[in-house]
Image (cartoon, rainbow, N blue to C red; front, side, top):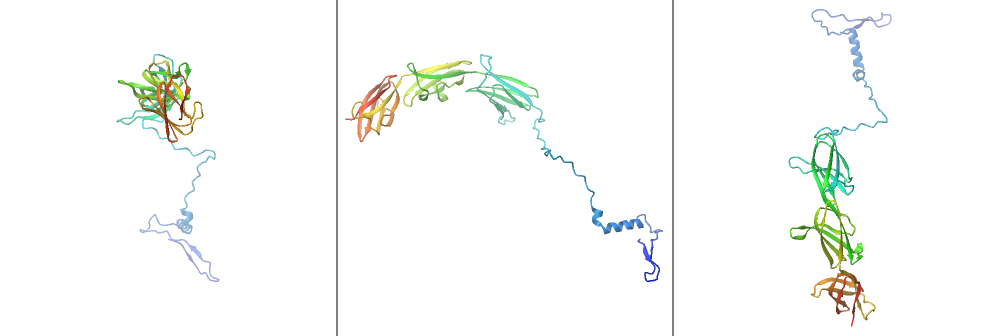
Length: 333
């Protein structure tokens, strides 16, 4: 209930006075009835609704101008806390010797999956002595040393592990000569084969190696196929590589370099654009070349040379002696 004004508001009348409301009594009165103070508060609320409904201001969160936002926490691996890792130290030695391998090693660590899952490459290193930090689990530690290798299954349980693998390997170095003269590196290549059954060249291990190359191989027997030039000067040699040792092999070729010419007189100028064919005495083609004076390396033996120029064909037989380089001329007549 709200109070009211009484009295005459005209000239000469009494000033109006405020009559407060009577407090309700009787059976209709309830404790929730408004008093004058409550009525005034209600009027203020109705008059300024925005002020009454404004939420209380919250203090600003503290800021640091120089500190970036913190990154989200890293997801821990499924097998345990991210911080729980074991240190694995890996090194290798050669069979029959305790001398550690100082270079040429490639280490790989594979995690072995469950339920037939393929191994997962977890780490790789070229250091002779390598260190890996890995979570608990089962792994395959693999060391490659040239064409030789060794591996070991390891299990990590939150403790450091020191592993030394033994690589059953030796090394091979090949050179080539004609008599006592070394064959230039640019003209010699060789391949290494591993015998399989009765086939001495059953499996190719190394192709197109150069003289002086250090080839690391598992201990065993091998065949060396050495090629001088790019024709038929080929030599084969069987040898054995022993673990922990360097095997040096020298292949002695029996061949020579010949220069082919078609001339109008002995010792004369060669005709350009001549097509040459070199055949065995049985008629098998060994090599074909075009030019005024092509050179090629041939194994020692007997050959037939055919020269074609301006529709004419010329033929002669010749012989190659090992180590004796020479010109092979055909006189056009």
